[in-house]
Image (cartoon, rainbow, N blue to C red):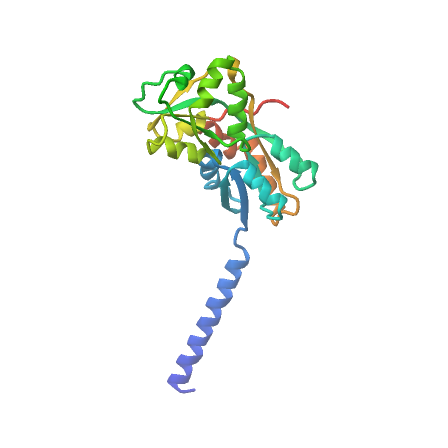
Length: 255
């Protein structure tokens, strides 16, 4: 064999070895888990995903109602996590998800830009004040409607008269506040904490608070059911639960 022929044979063998090794490495790669989750869960879930070993996690964050509607229309992620329990329960009743679990709780707060002179709900009815809330179909909007319904009628009407924006998820409310588009908003406490000091949370009376609970479920027909079950389990104990508490979520209420 000539030197050139030997070099060609050696190069071919090396290339074949690289291809075989690449194929072996690819076959052992972690699956990609698709998780549709409420926008309010972004901070905690992103931190959790960095520690989740059974799979690489890709998120779709949006309003819980919009994500539930996608599942109803045939878009099937592996996991659905909502800012309420009603939407997972409704999907379960239709056979679109496995039995949901309640994994966290939250609170509504009055959110204002740092430095604002607004001190409480009574200020939201003042002339010239603009307020952003969630749209009527998204969980934060539903919770807000329940809270406002507990105000005296006159005060409630004044606040309702100052609502200028109804956003499809909490991200929109935060954006309006940070951009100066509105003076105040009704948000989850965790969303204000995630704003890194740019927003201030004003605690609201316990008597006005609705019960806020988050539910998650493995989607029926999930491509990676084992990893999906592990992800949901981690929200109840382990890294997921730890990140939820670190982000300011409260322990899940007992159903």
